[in-house]
Image (cartoon, rainbow, N blue to C red; front, side):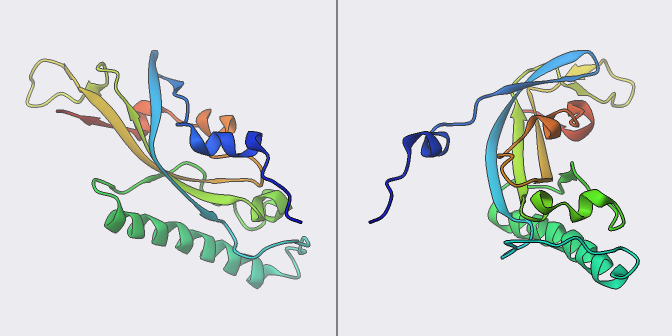
Amino acid sequence: MPTPIDAKHTADIDRPFPSFSLTSNGRVYTIEIERLHSQHLYHGVLEWDPMDPEDSTDELAEHHRKELDRAQRLAKDLALLWPGWRSPTMLTPPPDWRDPEFQHGSRWQGHLWAATLCSLDDFFPIPFRDGGAPQTADYSEAHVLYATRLGEGPLPQRIRDTIDWERVARPQLF
């Protein structure tokens, strides 16, 4: 007999993601997730045994290259599927294959995410143009890719802590 799905595990899917704050250049931005996409970082990995970097150099380096290719392919696919999707910022570049983090089991069973983040705050600076007066944008938007570990959820705090909004986002005008 199938087990009923516990409501607490599905509730997050049914609700919009809550907004959160990011600080950048002394300004506090309220950020919302507009669009979100997830895929397994490594499909079909149920268990993972660490490999000795000296004995498995070629295999680990190949996994590293495949991960970079997977992120680039996802960015290209979303450019076709999501209107307005531009070249994204990679928030969590793949660690070097010699790094122990690269072989951590929860990372291999994690997810690759793509998100469009938006701030409706109207004080995002626009770079000076032709010596004109400083301007601010109507809102700001960022297109990002990042990797999470198994069980971390869609946008964990450790990822949010790495975002410098004014470096990652682009000004937008209505």
